[in-house]
Length: 254
Length: 265
Image (cartoon, rainbow over all chains, first blue to last red; front, side):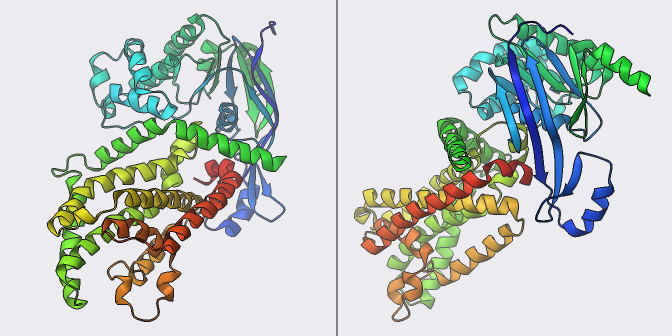
């Protein structure tokens, strides 16, 4: 695998993420969850609480220019790893180092007001990010053009198809000129070409390191968009490499 | 070391949130617009609530308590003006983190924003009810007696007290889902035992549960200057002391639990 002399932009060093699960009937659930196969490793901590080990000694280094996908079953730790990389969750042990602006678009619907127009929602998303009204207003023409929503840009977001919503989200997430773009699973195969354009748009901005980190369980998207795939299983890395090689290996194991 | 790390992370969170104050204010304003969307009277409902409650209680209780209406009605209006704000903040604080849950789990926004949003939103609501208070104070010739400086100082101290109370209640409510019910019960209890509908001067004996009632002091330092009286220095010092101590405790609780909130909500 070519590992150019590019600088690392995200480093996860020995990251463990363990959290307690709160249920209304913890005790009755304990027996059944321990046997369950989904998710990370479930167990009990010293005081007998049900805990999930979602990530187990995860070491990931992402270099500038890479487009990395996290792949795995439901509950393999993809989204958790993204949230740790984005700085939403603090790791229980280990370190997360990021170099550059991170723009994380984890859930498209969060922060959106369905009754407001696309334009107003961009204002909302920007305000939530800590941008000033002035900064947001300056970004809007670019977002309007890139999202290709036409007159829908001024229509309530609840009238949008999922693809249109995706384009609005992309346009916003890339407009803030991030060094590192982190996207969760909301990309559908139909968006792959748009995603390619989005990441080209990112790398076309002159200057700093650019990297894309996304979670997906669509092999098609990963093959079309990414330069590298990391396969997670129960919070542990089981494969890491170029998508075509990795998926060939996975197929041959079946 | 671990302790210092928690403290610095919590301080960074609060500083980042404070830097976003204009954004939070806009978001709080949008909350309000959403709440009154498609309602004809809109925010006037809040003024109406104060006006109708104060008016009807004023007439009724001035009879029951045998108080002159021209003193009792300004008293009850000023009290309710503050009390409704106080109660709304605390009740909404129970949902501060829970309601912000999706944002907390999906963005790197500072956590303290959720507290600021509750406070700012309710200050906006409170300002909408101000005309009713002003009308009553003018009508009953109290307006000339208002000590604006002291009232504003009292309001500021009350807000600082509300900030730490909201932080603690917000954290507890996110972790223990029974807390919101307890909070609304406790508030109701305090409404009856605190000098809300009656003036402590009406009480001849048994003043200890006024003297030791924190809610009385928090409210009195705003209400008294509004009615042309001066709060006792004891009330003022009590409010300042609770603000300082409360902030310390709330900051410690916030620092210790900040990174866990994303897993609670």
